[in-house]
Length: 151
Image (tube, rainbow, N blue to C red; front, side):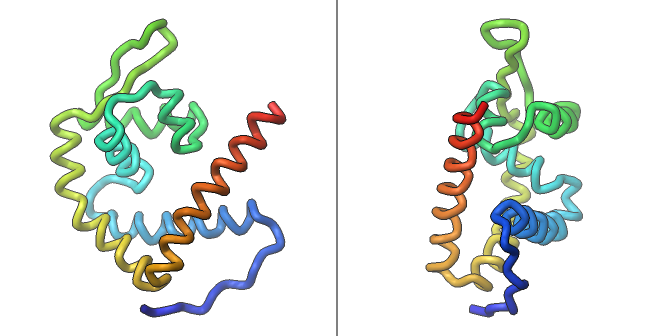
C-alpha cells in the first residue's frame, strides 16, 4: 500500500468532497481516456446493468445528478445505442435500460475500470477504502435528507 501525501484539510465539507470528487474523476477519466467514454457515462451503464431498468428521476436520485445534467449524459449513450429509453406511466416519465450493445461495451471496459479502482484502493489500503465507501454513502444520504427536509 502506498500512501501519498494528503492535501491540506479544507474547513468545509462541500469543498473537501468536491475536491476529492474532481481528483478521483480525473484519475478515472485518464484511465478511461482511450475508451471514448467518461466516468459519468460508464457509471450510468454500470448502474443500469446492475439495477435493471430505471425511471430517469430514480436514476438521478440514486446518483445525485440533477435532471439537466443527467439528460445531457444519457443522450450520447442513447445516440450510440448503448442505452434505450421508453415512455413511463405519463409522457414526462422516461424509463432507461442498457442495451445488449451497452452490456458488451461495459464488459469490454471492466478491466480498465477495475485497474483504476485497484490503483486507488492500493493507495488507500483496504480498511480505509471500505470505510471511505461506507462514509461516502452516509454523507450522500445525509445531505440528500437535509436537502429534502429544507425543500
